[in-house]
Length: 268
Image: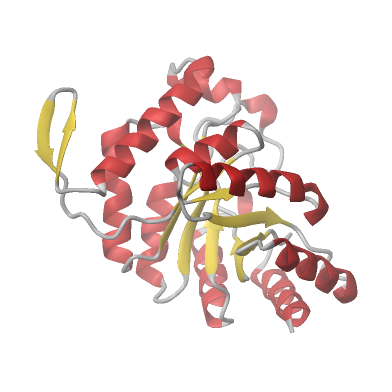
């Protein structure tokens, strides 16, 4: 089971210096992946914890690719209806190409009504838009020549397709993950909440004659309690989870590294 770590691309912790130090610490300590989140238009009355400051997800991942060598780079999750499909596909392919195939593309349909309003996008259409974008992304990585709006064009560079991991809850996220994705990326407080949904996801992929997709779970562990952390990790392994994304509370690099050390201790 691979272990990734989320770092803050929002709020006062999202300075250039702190993000770089966190990313390099994750890589130096041997963790599998770095993950960042996605918001683009936080309303003033919902800015607690971030102050409305969010770095763009794909731009930040591209920058992280340039300051790291080995660690995988994940979006947890990129909101598809916020972005036009073709420029998004081009950005994704560019990050994948320049990072040496290290991108993990977690995607979602979004939920925050004010962001949809700011973008002029119908929130009720977010599922349909996401499905259309996913179908287009898959087509772009399938062959060099692609069609959009009746126009054929060359999609190059066309690196290895990054794993597309569908975020969200059952049932809709499961069916979307089985149809369009390479895996499922749920948020979970405890492993016990996942068992039924995991079984359903595996049934859906089997019904489509697809191999079981990756399941990467975003969670937090009680790192102050090593025994409880190890028990939770063992439970996730027993369920067949392929990876965890661990959130860590921190304001400084020293706090971040302290939590990384605690996480590493819990793993061994």
